[in-house]
Image (cartoon, rainbow, N blue to C red; front, side):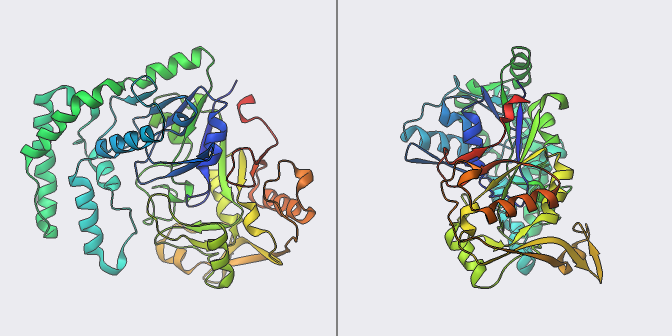
Length: 429
């Protein structure tokens, strides 16, 4: 049996939660390999809605969940999320949740810096969630992170906080923001140590054992390829690598262990926050897509911007992300629209391109090149086979496959996990 990695193929919010839940029921272990609690997955199971930000989705299915070293972990957010799902009847503890001992921690000073910087940007805000993700990754690269394993060594922890505060309080001074004191930070971390350390282990060893035993591992990504810090619409991106290639580094396995890569894409396009969005709709159709699709961020609560399916962008994500098959979600949102459009490229400074340029101003100036298709009058909601889909809906799917140069392997036709058309078992290899 092969492993499977799931990543977003647009700007996030593609409906990965339901898809990962469907796949998790077929996996043995689910690993979150990047991001922080700035990402959210909504799962509907047995009439109960679970909103997860840090916990791997397999927890809901009783599977072993692993938080990899590529994540930045807010201890308070994690414990709050655990208590929330426990109140919903889920059993979560060190027996079914393991955390990489070398995972970097998000401390209270990280969101404070995140928010102070956004305020200082004024009208040029990036649109971060303000949860400290970026500053925590900066500290990781700057080799001054407090990591989970440090909680077991009070002297190491104390020395690391000295270095961290030397750096951050200089930034807070420049931003005119309140400074942080060491004593309360140290006291709280020492208080959290006996709660968090039972979850810690070298998870790479567990994953190596799982591989030799032939167990099925699902690697769960957050955000999406076009928010990747290297390959996305920089600087309007997240602070980690969201492509499937990072599943190996972010979990502690070799690249050959990642397995089949699935890219999740909506049948239209959405984006939260600032940044370029060539196929965005500012008319009643855009509002209709948002209303029908209930387009509000799981984490931010902000209304998502909506637009036509951008095949040029998804093709770029397929190539960069190593996507071998697409999962198309929310096709039913397009039901009844008389006409559909697909963005096939961009006009930039008079030149037609198949991909977005890297430069910021060129991205902002990119104009979509559209192809128009006839819509369909029938319903796709709840369909569980291609035979139940209107003929024109099938044509729309086939055209997307041609343009993005990847097959649609799965189709989601409602929030219900069973309303899924699977043309291939992803774990079959």
